[in-house]
Length: 199
Image (cartoon, rainbow, N blue to C red; front, top):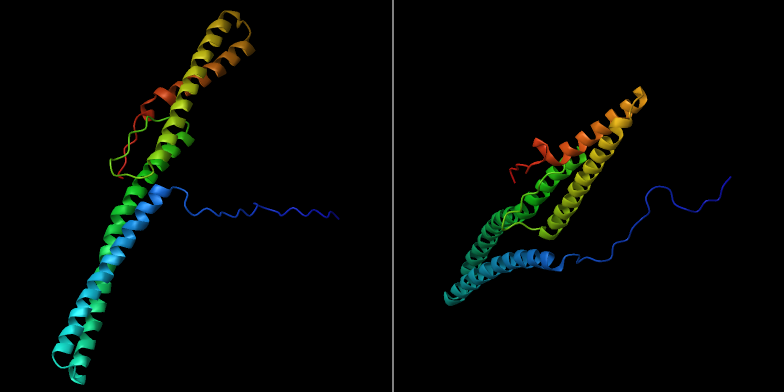
């Protein structure tokens, strides 16, 4: 029996840094905070007016009860309006992230299929630009490497063709030729162009 104290499976990773992309995260934090603060401010101003009107009308129990009902309605309507407004703003803001993620997923699927697409730039309001630029740089380097390997395979095939007199040597050259064709298709084929997206 072994006394192995290493845990099985993936190691537990404790992430302590909450702010990974400060500019991106603060931009969205402040936008949502501003929406919430604006909503609370409007409801507060309206509530203040209702209370002031109740006091000016004498502050009798009946007037205060009516004011309480009005405040309840203001709070309910304010909550509904804020939920709708926050949802709409959230939809627009998350689209700026979801769009690039969708496009990058299309590119990654193309790369996994062995093609190296030419990446189109993101829209002007899109987020994740630094990540997209890193992906674009990586794809460009992969395309360059594939092109260089295809060029080297062409040189090897050209050099070995006159020497390939046996069937085994010719079969090996055909295999090298198919590798070269695959590499050329990965970087030059009709599917390696810019991907279309609905994002």
